[in-house]
Amino acid sequence: MALTKPIQKKTNKSRLRRVSDWLHLWLGIASGLVVFHLGITGCIFAFQKEITEFIHRKEVFVEVPANRKTIALSTLTATAEKTLGGKKKNLFSIKLCRARPGLGV
Image (cartoon, rainbow, N blue to C red; front, side, top):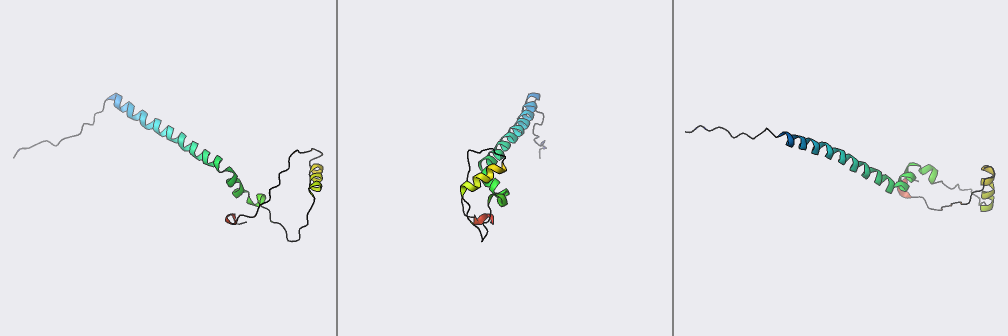
């Protein structure tokens, strides 16, 4: 019966290899964080309208009271100009939409 030595793996890496491994690890982590940040901010930018509507749903979606009465747009414009101190706005945006059932409104 012959006695044999167990085969051992070489654990002594060259200095260049250790530096290369260390740089690969930390540069990979840094670039991964950059890509993660770009992904998150890109998603926020892409869904900005939906996120804003969800967060500020009480301000964006207003319930119409049952005993409402219609006011002319010219009256609303005059009231807005009076409230703004005589400053005239060039653009009024009125968006008529139905409540979205998924938002709980």
